Image (cartoon, rainbow, N blue to C red; front, side, top):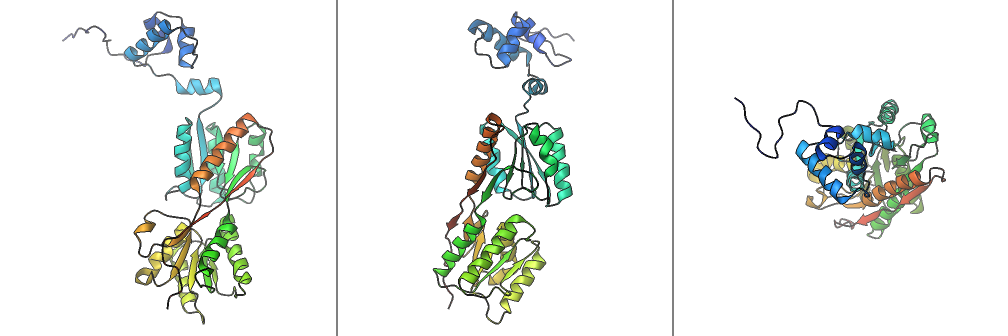
Length: 341
């Protein structure tokens, strides 16, 4: 059966329409179509209207790969982070900010493995991303120097990079711990314990060292009060048990990141609430707990916008000296954190 086309319809095509088809349909020069597609605002209104009508009729879509090659930009930013299996607050904030700038993101987990990190970064470089954001793991990222020399913007966040000079955005880790101590000591606590991340990780080391400094500043012993290592239920449970069995148990606990906080809450089970707990990092559904833990919140929105500002500055001033920007943390008070009777 043959079906005639009604006015304005076209027979089904067996290939994707091209810019040549658009020019033929609109009755204009190929160069005129190219200028309009590439954002040239000097194309006459009559021509522009005819070209847009032809695009609509044909269902034409510009070849994004060809556009990227012409502009030497992919409008894509790569990121290597500890894990994308769990919600990553900076990535979440970054994705929204990047989208508003017309940028897409490709993120890869490293699981804090230097080998996986290097493989991920090399893969992102091969994809011709416009920039790479790194939550560094390896002892040295010197292999990135050729990419930097060719002008690729690379920004470290959460942790500084070693072996290479990068723009860097950090949270005030030590300042956040001091805020936690100030909050707790103002409520009568002095025996304050800490459970945190592996100290081979920059943030884990910085936060644990700040706890040691604060305890010494109070004249309190550090012995047995600080437990660090990979965040696993068995390790956190053992740390809580050791603190509970101490000759003089702590009256308050600081946890070093959101994962440690959640793991500690699960391990405490029904005894949660009997322990004054302040967590580094806020986390979803915190306010549904009773009592809801006070947290030292990182400003993910400011971290995100700072990273993007550094990226844009690096595009316009590729030879400028690198900068390290430290973003302050904030205490969000929720629970009653005074001494229990």
